[in-house]
Amino acid sequence: MIGTPYRGRLAPSPTGLLHLGHARTFLIAAERAANGTLILRNDDLDTQRSRSEFVHAMLEDLAWLGIRWAEGPQTNGAETGSLGPYAQSQRSSLYTATFHQLHEAGFLYPCVCSRKDLLSAPHAPHADDEDEPLYPGTCRERNLDSDEPASWRFRVTDGEEVSFRDALLGPQTFIAGRDFGDFVIMRRDGVPSYQLACVVDDAAMQITEVVRGRDLLRSTARQILLLRALGHPIPTYAHVELMRNERGERLAKRDDARSLRYLRESGLTPQEVRKMALEEIE
View 1 (cartoon, rainbow, N blue to C red):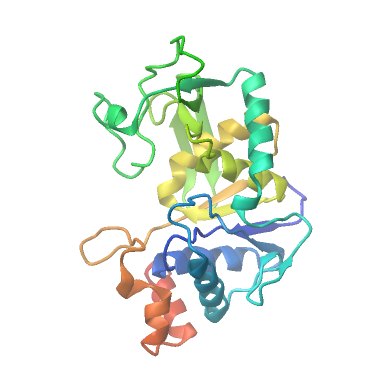
View 2: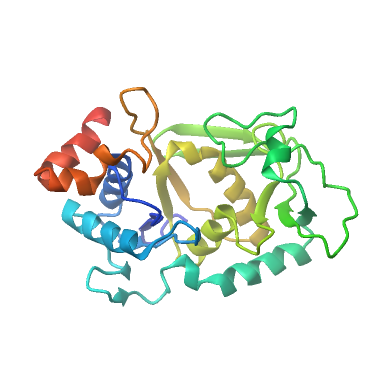
């Protein structure tokens, strides 16, 4: 994507309050987009946990932190930009169309394995990527009843190397079938996975660089395979070191004491919070 005007994005999920770890990633994303265009996307696919009050809070907290975006939902309730809607819950037709494209091209197969099945399989999930246990290929060659509820997996080529140069972490290489297996792109309830929705939206919104936490490195490898299958340009990637609490655990939305809203209400200034978010990696 050399020569293409820079387009970066923020993609928070409104399932809780933003914390210092989010601030770190989003501040770096905003800085890298300083001479280009920054897009804010509301990744609200998790309909059970996404709440409107968290959408309002993330817009307020990002603006308070001093982050400005050119496209996406705004704090006044409006939406700017020509590539919206900028909420994933309103983009289901795009995900469905891409699912059919992948299915017709032979990349997908149905799978009836539950998460419990996978967690009890000999291959344990990776400690830093527990949302997607390594799939052992149980349903690859099974003839399933068409009426049986099933998710749909993208079939990887075992042994295929996926390499990219991360703008912050340097060269990265992952091997399909070893570092990750066949992965879900459509859940059995018809909800697209993070992998599918992210690829569709980043391509449609013409994102040239994806900035996110280093816990998503394997997701990047999966998404590069999807982008190749769909014939989309592959953006550059920049994975940010995670913030951790006193126990060495990465920050999560349950860490209320580190939420931006808590820090704001405690009297800290945006400048102080920005310093807290970035000082460990300077």
